[in-house]
Image 1 (tube, rainbow, N blue to C red):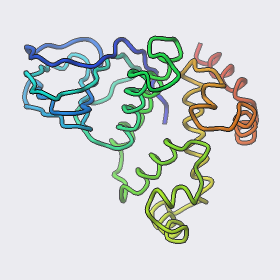
Image 2: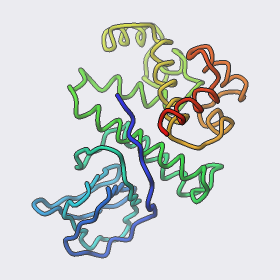
Image 3: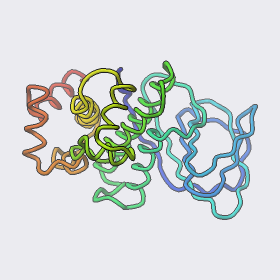
Image 4: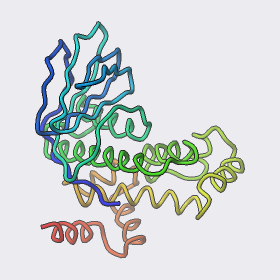
Length: 251
């Protein structure tokens, strides 16, 4: 599946005080952190509770209603390659990417949201969010086991292993391995972890300007050298070369 190219236009914490129906030429993403965010599109009332998101496509008429006390939400505006449907949701993988955006916005990481690296991280998380929406639009998974598994790998990065995933899933090692065979049905657990981790690395290298040191730190590698060895082992080239080749191809 190809990864969409994303360009960030605006981000910030919202302050809903009521608007008329309007539309604009870019995507708008609202993510409710606390309280309730009331709104509507041209046909349907919408209420976002904590953990809900609303993706509004370009030229889609929408409005926000006056909200009560205790509301906290983030608003992100961006353009992206291709077209995809909007709508509301509460998917945990989507929320993983949105929580990462919020953490950069709120200064909870070493990256300043207004720096070039901060912008790249937010754009990379938006690309991951959209890729997840593309997958959700396909055939429904048998259960949410794989969704929870992906979130665990996203959170732990290079530190992910069978024992960690079993603990996070509330299972013994044997129970987890049995459940993995039942739900995923192919390959070893280590191969699955590597596939998710490599997808995250490649998304960074293709579409973000974050330094190799920054990527290694975000994904919990012990050092830039460990990160480079890992990527070379799986892709046959250092991450810097992969980034250079893919940037040249896109240009």
